[in-house]
Image (cartoon, rainbow, N blue to C red; front, side, top):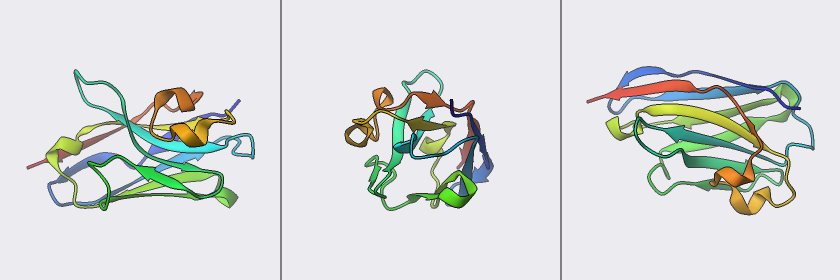
Length: 126
């Protein structure tokens, strides 16, 4: 069982930056993939960025070039640096971990993950 706790959300103006963190209670080789998802009010939860055990990353087209996912295995922590934030980035952001052998092919899709955090709110004002 992996427990995930997100932090780092907040309110910023357009063009600002935030760094999200996700502390995992037990990040081991059993967590083959880690990712960030977001959900805005009235919208579906969507994949934002993912990383697999080889370090391969994937990003949604809307955030590519602005967001960077990374992980510190020694600290059992996943990060996402978010730069040049836009009002459309406003959402609840969720950390996810996947232990499935096939998760690497589903880095931006919910079925690739079986553990979820509670979320951290990001609000970007214009």
